[in-house]
Image (cartoon, rainbow, N blue to C red; front, side, top):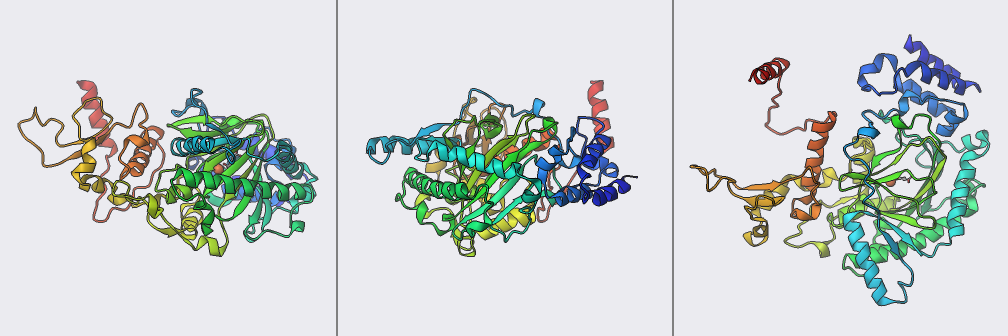
Length: 516
Ligand SMILES: O=C(O)CCC(=O)C(=O)O
Ligand SMILES: [Fe+2]
């Protein structure tokens, strides 16, 4: 029966009345607001057909909403999304740092203070607001208006820009990873590749052409200033980051988040880190952006006139993990639209993506050995888009030299690891040999690095840099496995066999324990 439905979508979506069908389909398939597992309902849900029908309309989520849907189609469901019961609930005691750039060029002591703030924000948050950045507020407001004009214009004209052709320097689409199999996001986007090889101005939609050109120039100049501050924060020559070929480029993704009739079932943007060196984000006053800080989702409240700067994956890589590329997401809301403009600093030309990127040699030392291997932007991106499939996890993982990290901790000279040696019970990170050394008759032939990861989150800086990243990541994955009951990969371990507990053993175990 449901195969007929997918056929019907395919046929109907070419007709003007197709959107009426979406609301019908959504109400037919959705029987409960609580999401069941994607896999369990395969008989009633042909995702490929639904996605194709949606994509063929070329009108995005906005088009769906205009058709009057009151339930969201199944393809937008995010498995296991339970915003009300999240263990990582938003905590208002935190707020993203705001950094004032006023007079930093004429007052050197002020500049030193600002560089300090930038350093601390990049290490602890990976996110900060900048104010007094030199871009007039009218330009920011007009950019938001221009993007809104594009998304709200005549549907037929908007449709003509819809494309999934990666060679196009300007294209409008909904969900770059729509065909990947996970829940789609409740948003549409328009992409502009602006540097190093800009499009012909005529390729940019007339409704936002002038402002996109002006905005991108001004953001490029601000990016230059912020890269200088970041270089200084790293203790490098102020022009260091601006001289990196692989960072010398800019593209923009401007998002339009329509109001969502069932915001508890989907997201505006799913959890991700940015595959850039740095991103500068302009958001309107609607709110919804959140950043994962100390294992809590913290709102990035809109500050009118400010811009949000965030560290991208490649800056995390080249700073050897000193700067953090952190997870962020955008909630779907039942009010809207929300508009944002993300400018990504990265050179996506063949010249830029083939340059070697690796931990900056000047930042490395015996205490801070490279935690990433040298690679290229092209290799990381290939893994991100082709193999990993945009699943929201950091694309840097396979580029970590992580398999040796724990071992390297134990193999560090005693002068370095000695500072972690402790028998203090309350210490959250300590290394030692035999926790019961003074109590037990026997001593085991081993040393142990001990890290308390919860319930109070451990600050990464408390861990030795040599195994910091891998420990944080490992604990996050274990937590996900235990708490969320999600599917995780069982990695290939050469020579290993996998043991798993069968149902009967579990039953016997419970009988034995309840009998006690
Ligand atoms: O819309 C936003 O506020 C964030 C968008 C974003 O994170 C991105 O485009 O990478
Ligand atoms: Fe992002």
